[in-house]
Length: 205
Image (cartoon, rainbow, N blue to C red):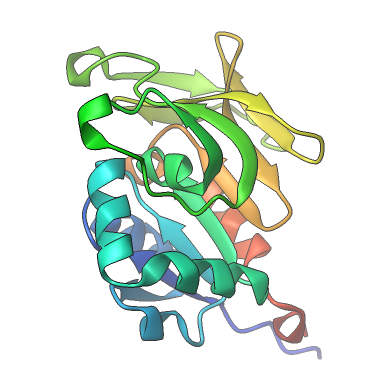
């Protein structure tokens, strides 16, 4: 019999935001999970989740702790990255809607998408909806909280879901970006998708 592949080890950026919820959901899927706050904690990981939270705060902390280039290097070496809500903003090459008083939004500049911050309004405008996601047999229960949208994509970006004509889930190679919070539901399918994206070639056997 062919042995089943060992589960990938996933890091969750744990500087601010909803990192604990991602960690718990990944653990229910059998993944090894570690919290990432420093560059050396990326070593040995197959994937990294950038959680929702406050994108400017997370970005500034990433700069302070030397994580921007470390995460770029992690991706260049084959590591998969999943950005949710604020994490999606951090993945983008172009960001619209950053308040002027915040200065330049630090970002990873990795995914060929243009993101609009807070596209669905303020905290009080948060909502739940059922999304048709490419490859899923039934709708996904998505939670949107001060959510951004993907305004534009360049060639090579696969659009996986839209809400009211706006792109809210997209993939490019082993990068995954979502406007909403899949960790706040009992549905693990998007995390399962990310785990499948996170297997490096040596883990496929």
